[in-house]
Length: 272
Image (cartoon, rainbow, N blue to C red; front, side, top):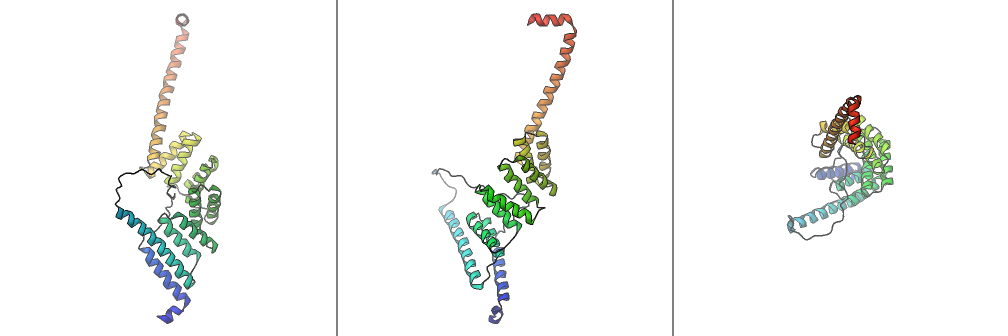
């Protein structure tokens, strides 16, 4: 066994196998190809004393779990250093592990360390972009999304996310271009279709295009509440407009008949 571990390559494989086994028991962080947004940064709230459904023991358990996560990560780092196994991919995996557990700042450190070690991967840049967007650092987020796109130019996920960034910058034409490209690459992208519908509905006021995008998104996922609500408003507005147009057309016909009769015309003016 000792002779086997003296071989550096075998030792590295042994450790990576150990890491894989350890992480396989934990929920894997997998970036959804469509729904890729990180949870929003929590707003500051005024503390209000109220009854909590969590018992002190549960809160204590959460604290211990977080301490265990950081302890495990620290042990990984120490072992990598001793065995000279530090690599960009190892830091990327550690970042994914932390991101799944919403340890955002620690995850970003691991991702940046992976870049320092010349590790290049589109998902790495995408995650860094999302983390920067969460902090409203839109310029650096843009740089990361463009880097991700340079490595994977046909990714609907990256185009969709880039569209969200443009929309936040109020560059609506560019946002439309990116959302449309995402739908072109993946016609079943409910996220891109929803974003496209929202762009037309809220910002471009093109309700026919919004209706088409929302309808397609709901064919894929009927449970998109925002699409359902906005589509109902559009349909109600169209119905009301059609009724008004019909009433207006009938009114015009009555006016034409009315003006043909001179006596009716005179009575109209007399009454006025």
